[in-house]
Every structure is written in structure tokens, then in C-alpha cells.
View 1 (cartoon, chains in turn red, purple):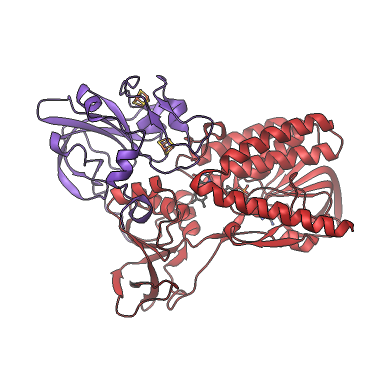
View 2: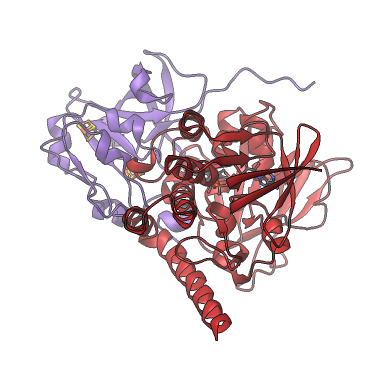
Length: 371
Length: 173
Ligand SMILES: Cc1cc2nc3c(=O)[nH]c(=O)nc-3n(C[C@H](O)[C@H](O)[C@H](O)COP(=O)(O)OP(=O)(O)OC[C@H]3O[C@@H](n4cnc5c(N)ncnc54)[C@H](O)[C@@H]3O)c2cc1C
Ligand code: SF4
Ligand code: SF4
């Protein structure tokens, strides 16, 4: 097996990975970015809508444009990018196994940054295996990347930002969204996204769930019902909607497989999507020299993924001695300041609390280990 | 229950309390932005896009956008650049019986000037007919069209968009 070495290897070329690469390269590190997709940018490339966030993070710009700009910057800086290359494993010594150009290669990097993002949750109900039931992210890839409409009459389950945005994009592509069904008593995503959906005449049914998909060979009808305080369907409240597609937008969970293999410690934080890797304020995990950034550390947003990427890139470069302690500290302070403003307000507060818990659990674990 | 978080439609109280919604007097004087952004979210492109300094959010990015009605010229740049599509430009001085509502629209087909369309409220319900005055699609709007629509004055506090036009039917193969 061929073995190659580099200063910093980054798994994932999404918002987080690309920012980390740029920072590390700017500090003078030799950087290799690996992504299994044939296009870099991760989630950004599916996002045709104008982004939220601060103007400093290019909000108001469409997601794919942000992705293109990040990529150009990274390519100009002299980072090596391997696309169509799957990282299938990581050893405890942080060496990683990659299939690149049909060849099995071991990459031995002095520092590794994992920025693999998150994947969709699924939900089972009677009929959920019928063709026509799919993840909202899959539906989004179909309309925005492959330009195919998954169906014409759609019911969306989940009113978080993903459910709201994908509903909007399905309508833009020409489908009808008949309802957004949400088990919680409140809409999960931003009010302004919900507002667009309502102006298009789509009802958002809070306190409801899908109880059944009905159809012979594919989805023909969807049964929904009201739920009680324990999210149990209330008998007698069932309604039937004639639909050909059900999209599930019931959350994301971090793609942490590589980190488990490498022996990272985890903590459980539901607000972040489940088990998330412990990491310190420099984004370093409990495995020395292994850093994380973006949705893999807990599902948030592109703006925060970019800043965590910046932080991981600066920290990894600094630990190689490429930045003075003072220079690194100064940059970290700026980045942490921006992250702090992002994690505020009625939606951000929850993520701030979650991140504080993650950092505190890491500190407690590290203290225990030193004793 | 009422309110943006339960229905996706801001309640009367939420709109009354929103610092981005101009006064009735200001709307009577002519074109002015009406920012119906009522939730503290980390977002501020409206502030940076306004060349006249009429929108303030400040360093705390989750603050609600505040409109200075005196500085706002009604130029409409913010309408196309708000990712939440939460801004319209209202002109109650358009004519003696009509007002215009300029709103962002991202569906195809687009209407054309002179068309009569169904004008809808914040919940997508048709409230009256609207007459399309202008459709603007320029590079500075980055893919979003802004549609200026005239409606009877009494409906201009209600009307916020138009009903989607039927597209060419996509054939099943
Ligand atoms: C519908 C939707 C709308 C959104 N809208 C907004 C918005 O308006 N504003 C905002 O700020 N955020 C938004 N987001 C969130 C934002 O897209 C993500 O938070 C952000 O992209 C996360 O970046 P990331 O780099 O952590 O992960 P990703 O972008 O997911 O990138 C991870 C990359 O890692 C690669 N990868 C994973 N595993 C491997 C492996 N084993 N080997 C090789 N490569 C691998 C993947 O191919 C992928 O390219 C939205 C998300 C969705 C789904
Ligand atoms: S309409 Fe023009 S002047 Fe008024 S707030 Fe918007 S961008 Fe500023
Ligand atoms: S750009 Fe739109 S959604 Fe964002 S803060 Fe301004 S008005 Fe609200």
C-alpha cells in the first residue's frame, strides 16, 4: 500500500473543511483536503437560497456561490484537493485510509482535521418503506443538483429550517407542497422561512404527525393525525391527504464514524444531534493532533461551521509551530468573538448552551485523565 | 395559537412591536420599506445593503432590524436582498384609491406589467385582485425578482404577495 505524508490532512471539503484548509495553508502548512464527492463545498452546493447569517459570512449570498468562492480561495492558496476519494478508516495513530483514483493509499499526516458534516435522520411509520418516502435532503439533491422533481404533491414532515427551505425549493421547482406536518407545538425553523411557506398558501400543522403512508406500489395517500403532549397520535383525529411523496426533515446527526475508530471520547448532546466528539476550545479532540470542525462537532449552520474550520486550521498550524503563540491567540480571539455572536438570540442560545456543555465535559474528562 | 412561532404568520401584536415596520404617516408620504422581521435570528444583510443607513441592527447580530423611516427612500434594494423575504416596500401615496406593494418573488413563471393577479395575505389567502405595475430583475437582486403591484388602498396592510402562477405542466413520463 502506498503511503504518503503531509503536514495537515483534512477530511471533508464542506464549509468547515475548506476554511480550515485555507487557514492552515496561509500559515504555511502543506495541506491535503479529501472529499468523497465529485464536487467540493459539501452541503453548500445544494443551497440555492440566499444564506442566513451575518454579512461577514456572506449572508444574503446564495449557498452555492459561497461554496464556489471558498473553493477558489483554497485552490489559489496551493492546497491539494482530492475529490471522489473516500476516507474509509482511521487508525488510533491518526493515519487515514483513502481510496483515491482506484488506489488504496495511507495518508500519514502530522495533524488531522475531520470535517465530515452530518447526515439525515430517518423515521419509521407504517408504509415508510414505500417508494415515494424520502429524506428532505435527498429531495433537495434531486431538484437542485439533478433537476428532477421527486413528486408533484408533497407532504413534508418536520418544520425545522431544512423542512421549510426544502419545501420552498420544491415549490420553486414546480411541485405542490400540500402541508408541513410538525409534531411539536411550535414551528422549529426561522419565522421568516415559515412566512414564505405560508404566503404560498401551504398550511403548517403543528401538533400533528404522519401516522401512515398508504399505497399499493408507491405512496398514494398520507394519513396524518393530531398528537397529545407525549407525541402519541390521538385516535379520531386522522385526516387523509392525497399525495405522491413524503419528505422527512426530522433532523440531522453528525457523521462521526471516523472519530469513533480513532478512539475519540464522545458526549451526548441532543441539541447537537446526538453523540458528538469531545473537543477543547481549539477544536482538538481527546486524541492528540486530531481536530474537528463543523456539523460533525454538533449540527449548527454554515456560518458557525466556517468559523470552527478557521479555528481548527489556525490551531493545527500553531501546534506545528507555524504560528507564534501570540499570533495564534489573536486570531483565535477574533474567531471566538464571531462565534459568540452567532450563538445568540432565541435560536442561538440553545446552541451556545450545548457548546458550553460540550467544552465543559471535555475539560472534566481531560482533568480526570491528568490525575 | 397566534404568532409567528405557531402559525408562521406574525400576529398583529408582533407586527405592531416590530421596529422595522414604519408608521402609517410615513407610508402615506410615499415609498417606504416595511420590515416584518419579528424574531431574533442571527441575520443582518438588510443592514449592510441599505446605502442610506436606514436599517440598523448593530453589533449584536440577533437584534431586530430597526428602520429609520426618514432615511428610507423606498429604493427597494433591501427587498431583494433579505434572505427571509421579509421586506416589502409600501406606497400609500400611489394614487387616490390605490397603494402599491413591492414584494420579492422567486417562482416562475413571472407575471408581466399590466397583468391582473390574485393578491394574497400573509397566510396565502386571496384578498383581492392586484394589478402588476412593474417586474424588476436586475443583477443587484441576485436572482430574486421584485414585483410592484397596485391594490385598493384598504387592502395594502394585508397584501404581501401574489398567488403562484400555474407553470407549464411537467409531464409524467
Ligand atoms: C436544506 C438546508 C438548508 C441550509 N441553509 C442554511 C442557511 O441558510 N444558512 C446556514 O448558515 N446554514 C444552512 N444550512 C446548514 C449548512 O449547510 C451546514 O451547517 C454546513 O454546510 C456544514 O458544513 P460542514 O463543512 O460541517 O459539512 P458539509 O457541508 O456536510 O461537508 C462535509 C463534507 O465531508 C465529506 N465527507 C464526509 N465523510 C467523508 C468520508 N468518509 N470521506 C471523504 N469525504 C467525506 C462530504 O462529502 C461533504 O462534502 C443548511 C442545511 C440544509 C440541509
Ligand atoms: S428601501 Fe432602500 S432606502 Fe429603504 S431601507 Fe430598503 S434599502 Fe434602505
Ligand atoms: S435580512 Fe431579512 S431576515 Fe435578515 S434580519 Fe434583515 S429583515 Fe430579517
